[in-house]
Amino acid sequence: MEYIQEIKLEDWLSELKAYQKNTIETLISEYGEEEAVEKWLSANGSKDNIPFGGIQTNDTKPFLDKFKAEFKKFICNHPDYEEERKKLNMESPVAKAIWISVISAALGATLGFAATLLAPVVAIMLSIVGKMGLNAYCQN
Image 1 (cartoon, rainbow, N blue to C red):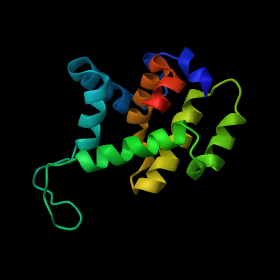
Image 2: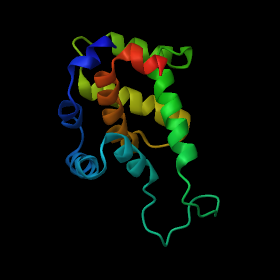
Image 3: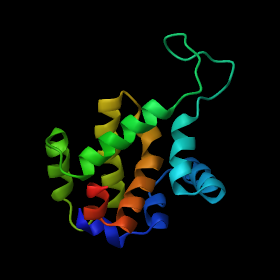
Image 4: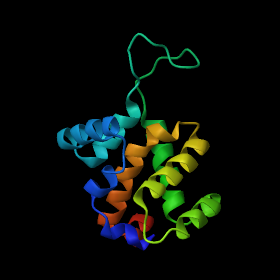
């Protein structure tokens, strides 16, 4: 995990599909990394669509908080994600696309969210952890 400190945001984002990369880069340039994560996760699509369960709400904070909590559990060695981390530790050097994919899939399975939709925010969060440092992030 300590290798992520050596990888810049641009490098993480370069592993995304073009449509994801372009959109997330626009959000980052306009709002910054942290708020881009929130904006991406709060995108609901057309306002004419009613979400599952029939309740229309603009409050995305509970999902954002849950995503961040699960991401932190993954990064900071919580036993819930031990098997997935073992897969990553077998990769050397860090294969950015695999990291994004494995983390997105693991969190998506827990949160009930498509891994493809989580990939851009996982890339940003990995960059944030890298800038902050793994120990500092886990103690935060």
